[in-house]
Length: 258
Image (cartoon, rainbow, N blue to C red):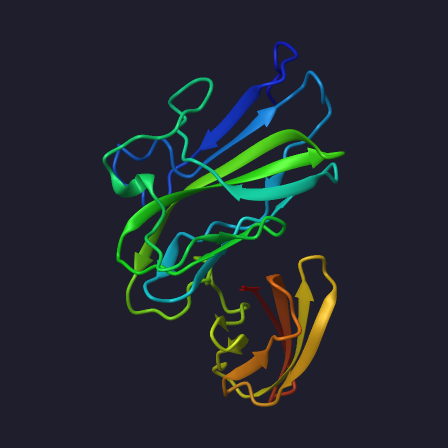
C-alpha cells in the first residue's frame, strides 16, 4: 500500500524485475519494466490497466511471430495500444529514452514492418537473425475520448533456431493445444496429440463469443482449420477430447490471426 502525499496530475509508478535474459548486473535493473502514470488530481479514483498475459520472451528465426499485450481496465475505459520508446527506471521523473551501445535498445530485426493491433494489443513480426532485443508497448486509457492514463510494458526479446512455433508460452504444459497459425494459407494447424481419440473444437474471440466450431476426427493427425471468415485479432480455442478409453480431456490455447 502506497499513500501518495499530495494530489498531482503526473505521478509515475514503476516496477522492474529480472528475467532469464538479464543475467548481467548491467541489465538486472530494468527488464522487464512496467510503469504507469497516476492522475489523482483530476481522476482520484481511477485504476490503471492490468496486462493479463505472461510475456513471450523467445521467438523462432524465420517464422511468423506474435505476442499478446492484452490489458483490462477495471473502470471500463477504452484502451488503445501502440509502440513506444524504451525507458529506464534510473531517472526519477520523467522517464527518458534509453541510450546504450548494447543491442538491448532495439526490437528484434524483422523482415516485415512491426504490426500492432491498436484495439486488441497483439503484435506481429518476422524475426530473421539470432539476436537479443527489447520492445515497449503502451496502453493508453481513454474516458469520454479524453486520455486519462498511460501504462507501458517493456521487456527483452530473444530468438532461437530449430523451432517452428513462435507463440508457445514458456510454461507450455500438457493442458495446452499446440497451435500454429499459417499466415500464407490463412489457416491454423493443430499438431497431433500423442494419444488416440477425437475432439470437438470451439473457437472464441477475445470477448468470449463463439466464432466457429469444428470436428477433429483423429487427434493423432494434424488438423487444419481455415479462417477466411474470421477478422484479424486474438482468439481462444478449446478442444473437448474424447479418448479411446472414453475419458474426456479439455485442452485450450490461443492464436492471433493477422
